[in-house]
Every structure is written in C-alpha cells, then in structure tokens.
Amino acid sequence: MLNIVLFGPPGAGKGTQSENIITKYKLVHIATGDLFRKHLKEGTDLGQKAKQYMDAGNLVPDEVVIGMVDEKISEFPATKGFIFDGFPRTVAQAEALDELLKKNNTSISLMIALQVPDDELRQRIVLRGKTSERTDDQNIEKINNRIKVYKEETLPVAKYYQNQGKLAKVNGVGSIDEIFDHISKEIDKH
Ligand code: AMP
Image (cartoon, rainbow, N blue to C red; front, side):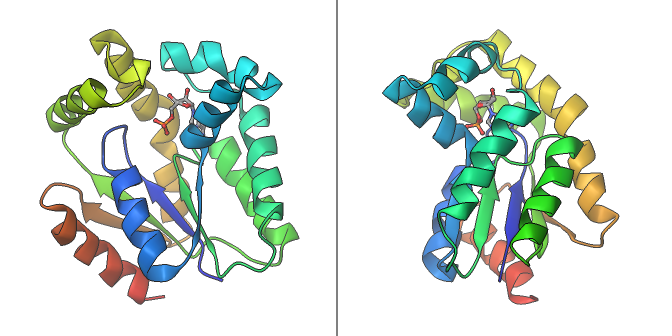
C-alpha cells in the first residue's frame, strides 16, 4: 500500500494538492477538517463535540479525531492506499495512526511537508475566506491562532516522521502544477 501524510500549515495547499494526488495515484482521501465540517453540517454528535474547537481555531481532542479516522480507514479494506490530509496534527495522533495502520498490516510510506512562508499563508487563507463558507478563514485572530497552534502542537509531527526517515520537504510556493511535479517526484521514489 501507498500511505501518504500530506503535511503543512493552514493555507499551504494541502486540499488542492490532495485532489491531484488522489486523481493520479488512486488513493483514498482522509481529510479530518473536511470530515468535521461534514459532521457539523449534518448536526451529528461528533460535529457538536468538534464545533467549539474549530470555531476558535484550536485542535479537536486527540481521542475524538483518532476514533473518527479509525472508523474511516476500516471503510476501505481494499484500497491501494490512503492520503491523510490535516492529520496527524499531534505526536499522539501520529503514534495512534501507526497503530491503526499496523492493525491493518500496513504503515506510512512517506510524509510530504509543504513549505510556505507565514505571510503567504495569511494572504491565501484570507483569499479563500472570501469564497468558502469557512468562518475560521474569515477572522485574522482565528487565522493567527491556527498558525500558532500549528507551530506549537503540529510541527513536532514532522520530526516524528523525520526520525523514521520518511520526511520529504517540498516547496509549496509556485504554480499548482509545479508544486505537484515536485510532489510526484517524491511519491515516485516509493
Ligand atoms: P482544516 O480543514 O484541516 O484546516 O481543519 C479545520 C479545523 O478542524 C482545525 O482548525 C481543527 O479545529 C479541526 N481539525 C482538523 N483536523 C484535526 C486534527 N487532525 N486534530 C485536531 N483538530 C483537527
């Protein structure tokens, strides 16, 4: 199986590049932010649990996220692989993901970490907020908090995969096609 973690700060282009990766490599996309937004829209208990954290730009508690991902993985026993987008966001989530994949006799193949400077991130998110329905994209304090949370709680996850020799850094500035070319080169090594 080919299991990829697509990593990067909010606004790095994970969603956009995931679409390209899924199309080319036929992987199942597990984007925890999208899953939470779906739960919110449908008014489920899980959506209720996640709402206050998402509204503030804070992380939803690990056990809630991990349970949701576990359920999702088990829906696709025959897939060629998964692309994890916006997950894992803490080292505890990364450890739990290793266990979940082990249970399914597989493991993470690589982490692709998109590199984008903070100023560019803010500009991109503000722009996205003009057309998306995402309230967390429409308030500069929330945006700054998400970038802060990323640095404090999520960045150590890159180290976790680096220690396993699985980290590939990719420049996330440039045209969508250019960036995807770099990503493909990294994936094709596997
Ligand atoms: P995203 O669409 O990935 O930017 O996620 C939107 C929001 O959903 C985040 O700001 C968090 O509140 C929540 N969220 C998404 N993925 C995770 C995760 N792996 N761990 C904790 N919270 C998450």
